[in-house]
Image 1 (cartoon, rainbow, N blue to C red):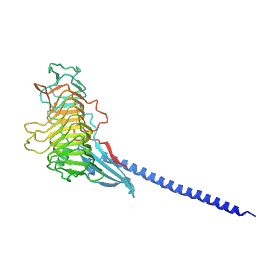
Image 2 (image 1 turned 180 degrees about the vertical axis):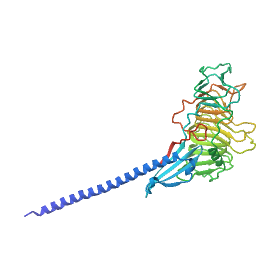
Image 3 (image 1 turned 135 degrees about the horizontal axis):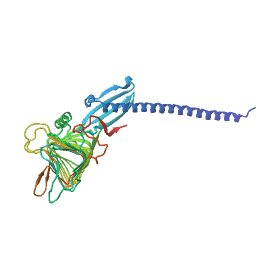
Image 4 (image 1 turned 90 degrees about the vertical axis):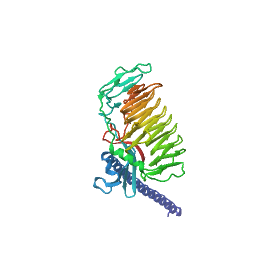
Length: 418
């Protein structure tokens, strides 16, 4: 006969085997659940990528309102697409979803440059030559007046650069500058009349592009932004002067005001648009992709000159432009100071004034140049100015607003996503 203790041993062994079998069942269940979860995520990721490609290959106006579509004719493969006009660029928002699972991406969209139109310099033909002196260097293609380019003796200094004057192709410019894109320009102009919420006391704000744009409206009261951090889907509007202190941190936001003042030492990434003037202090840094723009689409006389002024040793990575529909007697102008650096594109409807040591890595469009020393104002003289399109990053993307933009669209920056 078996001892009674053997029964206890059988019970223990059965219990252990039961625990092991139960564990295997649980492991199999969770493995299957994770496998299905991974399968759904991979499928959603592929659908999300398809949605991104759709936004990059369709006209800008196709998805101004959020649109839900079924990919491949299957209801399970659904995406929601939307394009948001964001200054001189666009924001794409894509959501891929099935049942309770959703993944999304928000990204900025820009245009590569058209190599056939790209040039270090485009100066309109005003029936007079362009003169160069000092350590001026033009590297890249240049659209020049029919009168050509010549050396000059200024401030007791002769031209010290390369004898070829232009290290690239010399092409003939037209009487007028290539125009800006009217559709995008008109979209910018409408922002000057937006209305929003009264700014509340806060030290930071981060608004997702999946939510409506947060508009902070300062109306007709001058205001100074300081000790404040703003990021994402935020637009600042003012009917008068808005001052941005160096203690303010801006990341991808828009600013529309009558006049904008940026204090010395500012460092941020933003798009600033004014109808009268933008004044940037010394040692400021605008990170890529930033924009400084003057927009005047209304006709009539203006009491002040439209201008962008940049303080000494400042760096702008992105776009600087100025355009006025009906310029008065005092023409709009962009002024660069000593040792300023622009990495990107400059478009001045009329003139650009500069001082010694200015550098433009990219492309510059203008009707004429101004250079002033202690005693004399020189027009259409390049003196100690560097224009180099070859030193701009090959991955640089610009805006469809500017003349040299390609029709293609590319992802400029990933902003949000899961």
